[in-house]
Structures are given as C-alpha cells and as structure tokens.
Length: 221
Length: 221
DNA sequence: CTTCGACGACCAACATTCGCATAAAATATA
DNA sequence: TATATTTTATGCGAATGTTGGTCGTCGAAG
Image 1 (spheres, chains in turn brown, green, red, cyan):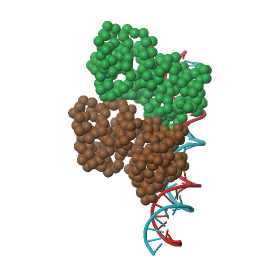
Image 2 (image 1 turned 180 degrees about the horizontal axis):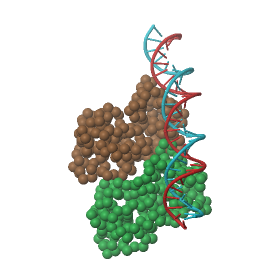
Image 3 (image 1 turned 180 degrees about the vertical axis):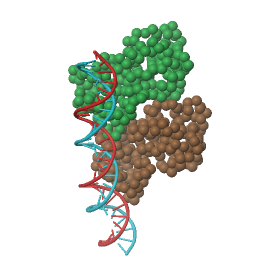
Image 4 (image 1 turned 45 degrees about the vertical axis):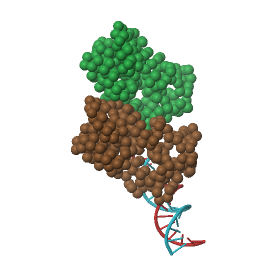
C-alpha cells in the first residue's frame, strides 16, 4: 500500500512517514498544498494524510479539487484541535476521516488501516480467499490455519492483490502501489515475487492474464 | 508500560511516580491540567492517573476532551473522599476506575494493574505463554514453575510483548512504551534485550518479523 | 498446421539490508 | 569502590531483494 503525507511541519511529516513505513506502507511526502495536490493527482495512492493548514494551497482546496476531478482516494484530515469549523468543512469536502492535532501516532495508524480496509469494502482486518487468510493487523498469513512465513515484499504484494481480488491488476499498477516514485519501470521483480508466492501457496492462487496482469480468483485456493 | 501522572500536589505526585517506577513502569508527570492534557494527547501512554482538582484545566475537562478526541487510554481518577458527585461525573466522562483520597499506594497500584490488564484484554494478573508465566502483580516470571531472574528492562520488554502477544510490535513502538520522550532513535538496545530474553527463555519465544518487528507466538513455548 | 514473436516463468548469481552476538564503555546501584 | 545493569559499537552471517539470462508457452499470422 502506498501513502501520501501532505504536511508542512517537517518534523511532524517525518514522524508520520516513519510510523507509516514502520507499519509496512510505502510513503511519499509533500510539504505544501501545490506539491501535494500534484502528487495526489498523478500517483495512485491508497490513502492520503492531509493537513489543512498548508502553504501554497490550503488542504481544503486540495481536497476539493481532487474530489471535483473524481479522485476517490481515502483521505484522512489532520486538523488543529480548536478548529471545529474546519473539521465540518473537511467532511463536507469529502474527507473520509479526521484526527485532531496533536494526536497519538497509534491512532493515526488505526484510522489509516480502517480507511484502507473500507476502501476495499471489507469489515475486518482479515481478508480470506479459499483457505488463505490474511490478517492486516497482525501482519500474518495462514493457509488452512497454518501460519505461512512471508517476506515483507511478498506480504505487501499478496496484501494488495487480496484487497482487490477478482480484478485484473496490471504489473504497472502493482509497481505503482508497492514502490515509490523512482523505481526502474522495466524490471521483473513483480514476476519474481508472483513466482515466489505461487511456490508458497500453489500456482492456482494467482492467475495470469496474459498481456494484462494478474488476478486472484475467489474460487481457487 | 508507560504511565502519566497528572496531580498538582507535588508531594503526592512524587510519591505516585516513585511507587509506579518501583513497580517497573516508565512514568511521565504533569502538574496542571493543560500540561497533562497535552501530554496525554501526544504520547502513547498505557494508563493515566488523573487528579480532578487541577489548576489551568480541571481533570474532568481534560478527560472529556481526551475522550471526545477518541483517545481510549485507560484513566484512573483520583477524587477527594467526600466529592461523590465528582465520582459520578468522572465515570460519565469516561473514567475507567477511581480511587478516593487519601488512599493506600497499594490500592492505586492494584487498580493500575487492573487497567493495563483490561486494556490488553486479559482476565488475571498472570499472563502465560507456553511454560512461561508472567505475574504483573508480583513482578516475577517463571518458566516451568521455576523462577527466572530478569533485570528491570528485561522484565519491561517481556511484559509489553506478552501484553500484546500475537501482534507484531515494531521496534519504534517498543521504544515509545519502554522509554520516555527523549531517547536515541537509532540505538540497538531493543535488539540486545531481545537477545538476552532469548538466552534466558529459548530462542523460540520471540519471533522476529524481518523489517517489521517482533512477535510473541501463542503456539511456541 | 506451422512458424514466429512476444510475453511470462524460472533460475541462479549478485548486492544489500537487517538482525544478532559479542565485547567494551558508560551508567546506575549497592 | 565494587558490582550489576544498561547502552554503544562493530563485524559477521543470513535473509531478502534485484538483476539478467534462458527457456517455455501462448497466440496470431501466414
């Protein structure tokens, strides 16, 4: 999962990024509204953390423009504690959730998890497909109840695929969501990891759609 | 485990802190409502001890604001013995428990233990995993019934991990809960202590999840 | 039906990061 | 001061991620 943090306070921005990276996400950052808007417009994020008080273009405008342009990316708003009106306006503008500053990093993480989960239309922290169960909170995967050991990239890949099961995912989309901006476009890492996942879960799990990408099938185990 | 004590009576504050530290917690203190509110809002405590009669902002308001902002941190209220109404109001405001002043330190400690325990979803003061039993009340650990000698940091680390068994805990989270504010971010102390615990309990106890953190497994002993 | 080309799978070597043990230094405790 | 505990420093080794190459396979065009 790939996140964008738009926050002008360098220190806070760094803290947020660290926490998110700790939690296993890939994170891009922006320090002003314009940059943030551009990135959110260009890159396919799975969630955005957006501060409201920003230089260049304030957070609310950024959010409004995104929504006007049809971006549905989940957005978590950061508001100063005393700016109630901002909170309301943020929700009107299409924010998915908000947290008042100052906040507990853990709370932000919990809310981000919830956003990603909801975006995938799921109710809990667990996604299952056949005998395979992925627990995003515990960071654990089991097959037939047996825990399966995955490396962090393997986990991310599987996680993304399971969040979008049934849909064909292009290699480009995977690269965009699993890596940050500068990454060698023509590399075959994704294929390698798909191969490794198949070795661990059986080749039936991930279906190859030639020329388009990969798909996780509900029926298969 | 990391605690916050909000109490304007310096003497009492000090006593509480000492007792808590003796019991193996890491403790931050605040002498007025504002400071207390800020800290509780910012730092991830495992429990808070909150006096109601405070300068700047009274305890009840502090608590109400925390709860309104979605903080679920367990809070133990201190009330004067004759202020029944306060007690009721405290519970309404979201306190988890209360103690009337003057009190026995023992009672406070017991209630704090209970709060931490409940927050972790446990029923007793003993947490066990395989043959290892940790008694939070006695501050002792046994393996196969044999007492194991741990240093205070070793105990704290093990305790935190056991309170969250099954979940992957990042090194960052551990540092945040085992040390107070200013602590060198890139230090390898945690790794050293994990190593020591493994030496004492066997390497199967603490599983490392590369790139993410550590996890205590229910299954393993 | 055959052939060709493109795409993906697989493999093995390489580079890198990460965690661990160890020991020495610093700090707290008795 | 002596002792126990905590922290820092460093090098090693294993786990992980990446690259490049080869082979197999699918599908379309002849």
